[in-house]
Length: 286
Image (cartoon, rainbow, N blue to C red):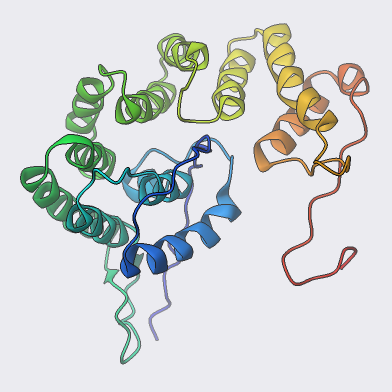
């Protein structure tokens, strides 16, 4: 009997900085957004998810941001069309037919899934201009990494030239392609540009963690240690409104582990790490 292939995500999603916006939501957006938000929490802050296909697009943090950060100027139909294209790009890759009655989209390969997603995003890009059209073009480029990497990189380069939200996301994705192509100096320059922005969209801890990993590979140990310490120290000292220490995010925990590897003595200067928050519905300690 054919074994079901697991659609394993091998890259990590950047954390998107929260925005105080209350966009219009139709029922599709609410239901779909809730599903990806629940899954997205599992991938929060892990750094390198923006690359190939929807291993590039399983940028779950970005998807949550895309679904919930549209302004009321956006057309509800356009929002729904983009959301459905995103859902296609998240379809399961499996050689096993879906269960009877299932409405979930499944694909036999990542290539097939990327092609289907690109077609849907292209319809959105052709039909809608402005913010949603730009986001559709970004998703086309990210998905194309699984099909035609050189062409996808050219598209990301073009999109990253703008300084809007989509341009910043494209710049982050482009930096990661530079890392994978063995061009760390160019990747570092892109991350540094993002880190210097007042509102880079992607959380600065995520950007700095990626930059620290490049410094480590380049033999710049002290620069890496300084960045890692700068990520962990403020987070380890953070407290909520009741004065209770805030649990560390996935990015910060990863930065702490890396800091312990590179400079154990420096890591000892930090306050004791706060335990992870227990899953919802479970008492602490379980």
